[in-house]
Length: 231
Image (cartoon, rainbow, N blue to C red; front, side, top):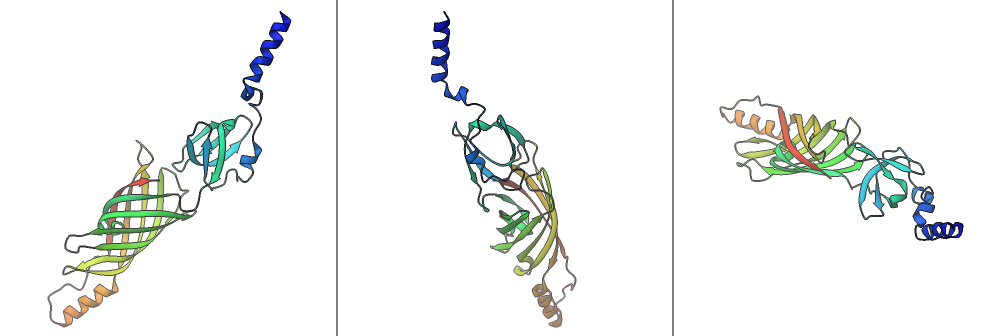
């Protein structure tokens, strides 16, 4: 009876090597990982699934990770097959809306450059002007990936129209992006801008000097509103 039991245990262990080594960590895959940093990694799992996340902590049982949408959870450490550092351009968003950042009525795209900083550009139309554009950058005032993210931004492009002609200038804004409760991959954004446009001001002055009945004052404030998908 003892012989049968001993043989059964040996047979069980021989066909279940993962159970013998379940508490052993493959230290090599964590060798270049900076725990708790802002850096994101691709975690390739044994079952073929993949996570894009910061790695907060590791022990022989579980690994705590934090996704770009600020969701934290544990994965089984020994289920991680490989870890790769994400390149700097891997995260951003694309959105559709109306306002300066969307080139009037159009689309906008952000690309993550370094922590807190995105380059951004929008292209669209305002009907009387077939093509409008604005390019610039955004700086996030709160850690990226959180549900509510305030930011400041600066754009250069076509930001004012006079007599169906678009004029280029700078726009400085402050706004926010709010991840929707249904899924944090989608977000609502809103920005307020102060517009500088010397080219249009010069044109207004020319028209006034030529005797045109036109108001020399114009609205320097503008806004953008849109819906974004974050990747």
